[in-house]
Length: 504
Ligand code: MV4
Image (cartoon, rainbow, N blue to C red; front, side, top):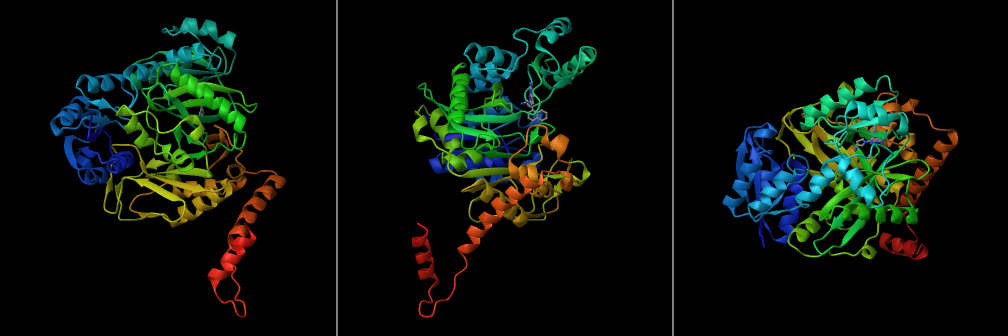
């Protein structure tokens, strides 16, 4: 059994994993590239080893070196985090072959879900609804796809079988433009994944992107931790996530149904460890499996906030062969959580990545606020990795409280030296549609223009309802602070105590 874990990642997620290890009494090994010598994950770990030059393929993607370092340092397990080697079945297998525990699913499950066409066929055979589209698992030619297209109906989406996350995806409106768009999707997929295969799905417009967090142990127990609403994306990068989904909210029966289907999808590939089932949900509450992410996800903390489950610790316990700490009945969602991804990019310059030295940074704290970050004052943001510098997570009793708390936290957040998308998040927090929870996957790109929030018009009745909710909430908050001095009773404490008894 392992008592030392190598974290094959960097940034905020490496720090997050090290924290879980620390709390479990496990030693930690970090790895780093040239630009990460001073990084927080290196400082936090018990030991750190140099990997190579900054480009990922010469450092964080060097699975062979990482396994070598694990063996040399005496680590018994590797946690891959997200991105880099996290969803590479060959790397997971190489870990196992080297006698190391891979803190994640089995290579067979990674492979089955990694090919999106095989994933569709596998879960569909298990009775999970998938978006209408091609059924074949094999590589379909353009001619075959052109023949199938009219039977599905336009508009269609051509997607890369090796893809996920929107790369190699093309909208197809009619048969005439289809050959050109298929070739474009194939080229993009070939360049990104070395695999130009594509499949077809009916394009669902005005749908929501809702995902369920799964935990599964080696004893065959599979549970879900509820959903996350992930419809707010820009260029297929999520920018804000919340849980519960405003679309499901208090429809407990709908949540339970979807959750059971998500569990069934995970069981279809013999899933073990933490994973996520993505669904598209249309306005009539019909839901369809999209894909499974076979890793810990960026947005896992909002689920931790409302369920009180430490997902990373559970991952490690599962990898140690222990059974889940929870049954499905033990899981319930409390309150509301929102995550804003704080990226080093300039919202005023079309979200161009921003690099440089962080001269000052002041992070929000206080009630209901969590910040996961890998940076600190003096750290230099390089152009080599993704632009996520921290995740701002708030938790409140209600959605209104969470939104007001997020506004407060965004105001507290101060950073100089690099530009961030904080102004964008502030605009989003003030958007009527966001406040009303009325948004879908098209919202950010089609309806929410950063410079024209005021053009985002809702009906007067909607605006009135939203404002009433927020004002009422603020009033409740304020009333607890109106403490009048009585003639004899001058103690605020006594007044608060009386107020609380009255309102019990
Ligand atoms: C879709 C879809 C609509 N119809 N598939 C995007 C990333 C990948 N995980 C799946 N994605 C989608 N697949 C069908 N058949 C809508 C999305 C989608 C999306 C599309 C355009 C703009 C933003 C989006 C945000 C989330 C999901």
